Length: 377
Image (cartoon, rainbow, N blue to C red; front, side):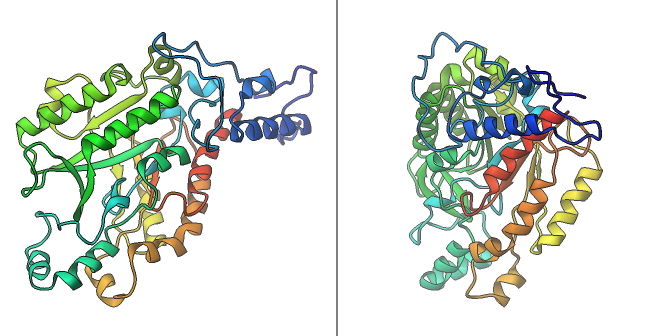
């Protein structure tokens, strides 16, 4: 395929390399994206057209300040926006050992989950001053709060929801070995307010786990989701394109891993498959991900998790370490794997890539940069 600039300069040379003119145009577009400017002003050669008009409920945004990736979705090239988000956009996601976005708000007073092992429960009762700090070190997977993650470019949020037995009747928390201090309703409201300020951005909320939730609490949670997001919700159906979402004023896809709730509410989508390697070693995790790719990608949205996972043997052998200390030295190798991936509908292509400690390295920019490969397709 050849890309042609307005002056007739070919985007690709005869031997398949990028022409100098096209390289300059692409670099200019990327720099504009990072500064929050409209890439359609660079050149039609990039296939960038102005986005469709905003849905009537939105007031046009007049400024483009803020963090460089807070408008990551808004400035995707035109060709990418025309195809389903499951095949033509790679989303950065925040993950956790068990795929948890909300672990930044854990502290030493956070109670341990009732679903943890009986041994851990006994240790917590007998030696809380020792047990809780150790558990906390291996529970925290994110340092940025949810607004900071969104500003950093994260567009997939993995939310493990629980009802504490000691809590009030309707107070729902998040959980990852221990319960968070943040309430679900407050966090969803924070996400909604962020989306109001970024009307072309799209997020995927993966609601799962549901520890201690009765059918009544599921109905309460779904009612909260509907009330908070309203017309922002994209109802279940064919996976939409970005242009379809923009034209409808829809910004939120909610996956919900409870079958009875799915049957009752068309606003909810089935759970998003997550490739979780459950590996301590980086190379073992990469081999797992490559094996999953060789088996073929799922048909819709799916997540490849680059999160390392400790086990009891590792914790006992490294008593002074934490999940953060285990993860950070391995991020360069994991980031190198990310940069090798390709978006698209192919059987070995990726869709959502989720990792721990968002902001600790160039993970988000590496994932976003994968979308540039679609310009060559």
